[in-house]
Image 1 (spheres, helix red, strand yellow):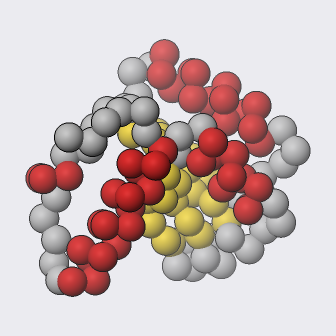
Image 2 (spheres, helix red, strand yellow; image 1 turned 180 degrees about the vertical axis):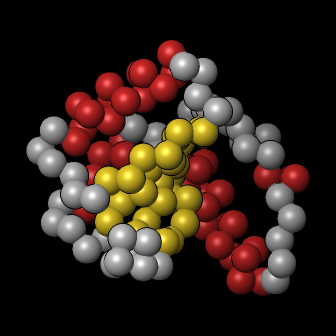
Length: 112
């Protein structure tokens, strides 16, 4: 269960819409929610802040995703299998470390 949502431009109702979407997806037993944000639009900073307050964390960058750059924010409703991730190179390890630190900040689950 993964749900992917592209946000081309967040509106003033972004926060309540995210809250409603998350409720609907949890009711469908979705375990991963990914939201793609267009970094070229106004309000993207506020949208990231809202998502972080809702427990979302950095999932990655999306070069030219919207014909402009994008950003992936995600929420995982269980502990990721960090030990099962296989990486290629030091750069990938640095990115994983950044993502993991942000996940730890976002989650209510202790990272053991």
